[in-house]
Length: 130
Image (cartoon, rainbow, N blue to C red; front, side):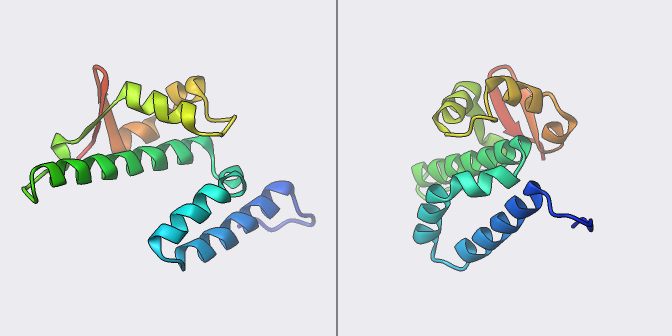
């Protein structure tokens, strides 16, 4: 929150993001996901490319974890076993309709300290740093 004598565009974008996210979180999961897709261009403006990439990776890890757990029929899966391939991440970035989150920006983010606090990259795989 910043106090100024005038309002900037990023202030309005941030207010829209907060309002939309608050409304979306009050909905059931399936409806919320559909609303996030429909309003992604409004929500995405206020979030930085690094925030969006980290969120994208978190969702990919969660989906992969659930996929592995179901494949083991409820068996135990640890997050240490879950990995995302770089090619899957690249494919996902290319599918996203966000012009400021491209491969060059993603490479910069993957080399950042913020990324290394949560994830680690080995060879062609990304793991959660535990």
